[in-house]
Amino acid sequence: MTSFEESGLAKPVLKAIAELGFETPTPIQSQAIPELLSGNRDLVALAQTGTGKTAAFGLPLANLLDFQSRKTQAVILCPTRELCMQIARDIQNYTKYMQGAHTVAIYGGASIEGQIRDVRKGPQIIVGTPGRMIDMIERGIIDLSTIEFVILDEADEMLHMGFKEDLDTILSETPEEKNTWLFSATMPNEVARIARSYMNDPFEITVGGRNTGNENIEHQYYVVHARDKYLALKRIADYNPDIFAIVFCRTKAETQEVADMLIKDGYNADALHGDLSQSQRDHVMKRYRSRALQMLVATDVAARGIDVNDVSHVINYNLPDEIESYTHRSGRTARAGKTGVSIVIINMKEVFKIRQLEKIIRQPFTKVMVPTPFEVCEKQLFHLVHQVHNVTVAEKAISSYLPKVYEELNDLSREEIIQRFISIEFNRFLDYYKSAPDLNIEERKGDSRGTQKGVVKMFVNLGQMDGLDANSLRTVLAEIANVNVQDITWVDLKNTFSLIEVRISILEQMLGSFGNAKYRGRAIRVESRGNKEAGIPRTRLRSDHSYGRGYGGPRSEQDYSQRGYDGPRRDSHSFGKKKKSSGYKKKASRY
Ligand code: AMP
Image (tube, rainbow, N blue to C red):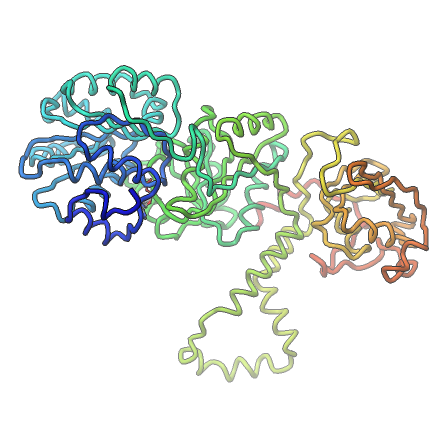
């Protein structure tokens, strides 16, 4: 089926989805809808949220049920209240033009009386969480004997959450001849058991490959010391000024703690977890949906069923205990054909989990370096400049103030005004980042690290004893050689020397730029350690003038520890004057 028109869906349903803007069926819809419309087929679909699975079962249901009858004909079970409300809303939209259609949502954490009244009105479709559904069945409010369709949505998640017995009860008490449609992002044994026990020759659909994730998601990981996770999170947020993220933590306490720290540090963030009251959770979700929040810090359970489009980043602050839940987490981004990034922040000991995840999702992870202070500042600066450029000026409203303003700024040149306006916002970043460390650590330390593709390892005779940390070493070298900091891709700082990796494209420039350069009175010496695969030899160069000439020559004999440092390229920070303190954490909380 390539279009909804040829799918066999009834006219009122077609009209409703046209209004929702559904033009072409998603892959799961193309496969499921024609089969399910036959009205007599069990289904097992391996699909994530975001694939259009709600419509894949909701549209056929809208077609198959008898809306003139007041009997409940379909129950849809799903793991959480949020998802429950979402599915009910979606189905109400699909059945908007079906006369008599009535869908009700029932879930825990809300008063049962109102829901009982809703169910007594005779909905044809009930969407519920398993616990509340059982409660209503036991009270005799819901009668399963007339059920024709049972839909299990996010079956793996319901089992993770301990609803196994409730599902068994509901499935075994519904009529034998009903149809069961099961949707799951992953297929652990327990889900396979349900399919075997309760389904009859089911039609099977896999969207995006068995257990695999959405291909529009880019999976990235950052390796940092466990103690630096929070700082790395902040860097990621600062590097992406327009971030609209869900940050996943493992426990409620951790969720609250991370959210509190973010709020204290000035981010638009809040926590979503099970210790909050329902109205607090609703309030947080409302703020997130309206984008008053940029970062929602959540537990897996609380974030289930969150259907927010345009989430730009899913950040795994800690990986889930059940590694398979990663798929659910990452599925919160790249919805409805959009792209998104799923990030894992891990420490060295957890790197093996990335390899496990790659096998589960059958997609590669990219290792990404935590942005350096320089990179963050550059990004923020241009974000600010961009905003200044594009801001709408309320000319009328400010016109009466402007003459005085012009007068006040009269003695400043255009450049000075620009500098000052930018500094108002940007100084706090410079302040925070000028002494912030490089947070990256390597998966394998030391010289034994295999050289990566496209880079060359180099030796530099500067190290910790020169008062440098990895980050300031990179900046000093880049400054002298006049290359981009980003092209120095790795630093292993030792006491008296360091090993670095640079992109092959800047090797010659690196070799040619340190002729007479000194740092704290010591001549700087760099050597290439070569890259056999790329045919690049080792060199042994001491202040070799001949190298520098092609690149404007080694700069004048200058001690770079004495120079003012204009930073991030141009600021008053001076390298080499004092040893970096480890007190950056205290500074971090100031910002
Ligand atoms: P779901 O996987 O059901 O959570 O759906 C993900 C999102 O895709 C929802 O916002 C749907 O409204 C949207 N959607 C589902 N099917 C289509 C379609 N055929 N065309 C456009 N958007 C769709």
